[in-house]
Amino acid sequence: MDRRPIGVFDSGLGGLTAVRELARLMPEEELVYFGDTGRVPYGGRSRDILVKYARQDAALLRSFDVKAIVIACGTVSTTALGVLRAENDIPIFGVVEPAVHAALRATRNGRVGLIGTRASIRSGAYERLLAQGRPGVEVTARACPLLVPLVENGRFRPGDTVAETVAAEYLAPIREAGVDTLILGCTHYPLLREVIGRYMGPDTALVDVGAECARWTAAELDRAGLRTDRAQAGRHRFFVSDSTEDFASLASVFLREDVEGEVEQIDITAY
Ligand code: DGL
Image 1 (cartoon, protein in one colour):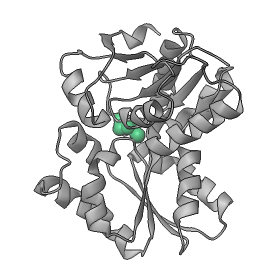
Image 2 (tube, helix red, strand yellow; image 1 turned 60 degrees about the vertical axis):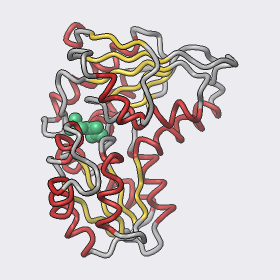
Image 3 (spheres, helix red, strand yellow; image 1 turned 180 degrees about the horizontal axis):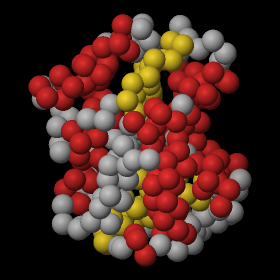
């Protein structure tokens, strides 16, 4: 039993798609979320910079004495999970392993599509684990650098011609490869679920990495005896590195409900 909060971070607001599922599965847990809104997007940055940012993000969360950290970001999970695990003595959960397990459960024909940021695709992290789990699996991967800015600017709804055109261009080779499962390898992408689902067709299973990571985290905390014994709803606190001004309205889009909890701006460079 452990009453300390769970820390969650992302480059921006995409990680709230994981928070939503964490709060649904474990309403009594306290959550501390950090979105690095002053430095988003992470997806085009080098490994060295990403490791530096990841260390600062984890240090901020650890200042709240969290019992575990969820890296609700495909980019950091693919690039800096090993570093954070080596440097921290609490459980650190990333999105790659849970997403790969879900994809291997879902695929029938052994052809899996993968979309993510440039850094995530460059890392090869998903492909390595997919091949370990099912030798011979065929992976068609595509970096989609324009999708995060589209989502952050609210351009993700079906009927939005820009979102549909960009998604179709990225997804064409993946659909042609005949995949039956597509990993949405970035926590921003679930907002484009309908646009992507319509293009790929009803027979393609879509894997939401943030939600899979939340389920994995809940199961692992249970197994390790680290769940709280509190009966009432846990407090949720949100921290961002840019102004908090638009946070509530933007965050409610990712959470699909109003944000309940305090929002504060912090200086991440001090960590
Ligand atoms: N939400 C993040 C991810 O899952 C990254 C977006 C970005 O900052 O480029 O990869």
